[in-house]
Image 1 (cartoon, helix red, strand yellow):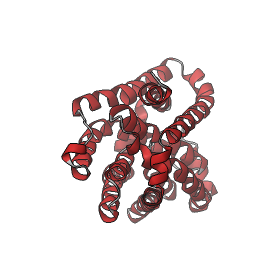
Image 2 (tube, helix red, strand yellow):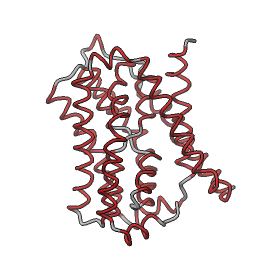
Image 3 (spheres, helix red, strand yellow):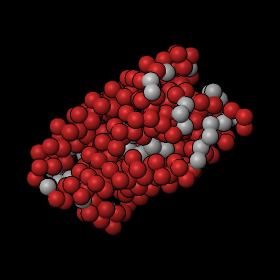
Image 4 (tube, one colour):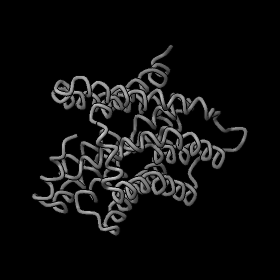
Length: 299
């Protein structure tokens, strides 16, 4: 097994499992009860992520006609839900962290079933029959359960058994997860450098456009439905910050096509810039008093 095969089939799924385990450590049953407590905020966030994001990527891919690999890669990126990174940005902005955790948990569960269907639909739409990567929807769903749902459940169980230790360890573990994700993305970029170079202009444009459009969609959908400022910021980050590790697992481990990962790799460069750029704006939108009350909700 060479290093590229190890990265694609072993290291990347392991990193994703660790990230989802961390999400589980931040979850409790109360987080799922917020579906009833804050139904409007949860509904707006879910619709923006599960419908708005894929639709935006699909429209951009149809309008600008990139290569099939870039088009499908952009859609795969769009259908991957946010995770612990969005939670971190929401916390830094003093937004509604509890809502962020709830949305991350729900999308992680729902997309186990939506990702295989939408990926297959994208492959059939943009690839010709003879060039289309093989995708087993049943195997894909099983793999997604193994690398997302199982680690979340294990993380929740660990939090239940040793909550005090989890409280002390979760922040250092998040930092480790960030470095692991960055390492996987860096190695992925090196392994796909020629494809990135050849498609940099169109793929880069599409990634930037999707990132900016979806963040705007998240914010204004929350604003138009009269959600309070902390929840507007949370939904903006939930929609604008995707689960890059999950996108890499789908493109590299499941489909075994590095060219499909180009959009995610470029997004790894763009997303932190826009997310951090929005941070100062978000704090002004929220204000100090609302921010303290929202960010102090235990997760």
